[in-house]
Image (cartoon, rainbow, N blue to C red):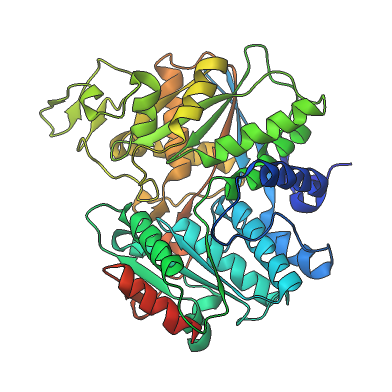
Length: 456
């Protein structure tokens, strides 16, 4: 029996997907755990706490909606809305809740406290901090049992949300938000890894907390299987020609999780046609699209642009890249900061084997289609700001811009398209984290100092 409920014509909401698909999630975790090589650094087991009212309330933030949006040029468009948590407005909630639940189970079974450490372009930091706060509020752990340190690019400061962890001086001290002004936004990954390496090479004396560095695909694959389970229960079988899943991506963790979930459904005899995947990126980090179409992330494969009289750069040689843009290195959305992601090889294989593609979009193209996308997403109950300058998360708009232009340019053969809504929020949706609660760090030693102070 499905937990989906109808909201309006063409919209279905799954209020409790973690409860609905609990058995499948446990099987997915068991599969992942069995496939992993022995770890020489701490990670909690792939087990969840026993269900009770507190855990049910904790997981309540993971609601998912599926909406019919009508057709566009003969294509059926649907939205898989993964942004229902008002404390994050991104899909990062799904994996964050599952990771924190695993940490809770470790704490309960061992009495060992845990310190989560993660680099983030911003959204994952917000989601993991929200999940930790929810675990404390729901009574699953105490503030001294579970803590979190996040390291975020200085360029993403305006995307950081205030939360219950910043609501009191003690919680803010225990859960530091560190910012780093590196030459690349992705430098926070190297910094977090260097800190973690140093911590394990020279463990501090007198610290009981287990340090968990969470940047690992498997931490996301399990949670994102839910996308496939919801799709199966909410939508009819794909149309002839297959179903295309479009997603604005940095590393495409979400689509790989969806594929994992689809494989599980096939094993149950509930799915046949493999999904087709469509990647949408921006010009700052177009590496997955470049890799897919050229077998290389070299920017030499970008088409040649010329300057138009109005100042825009234009090209018409390759429909998979923006036909108009203000700059060839335009950073449309700071969330997407990964260069040469290791996940490209697997996504390339899936798309080349089963179908799909990719496109790169520009800010000018997003603004050109913005009103149209605002009207389209309103059918799913979403409200984009009337002024696009108020938008602070562009993932959803990027995904729809990519799909609409791909259809216009003949890049999409499929008539059945699902857009994965992975993130969208405006300045009105959150209170920014005060600058006084953001601590600048320049190297791994400064990260270590900040973490040790939070544990004291």
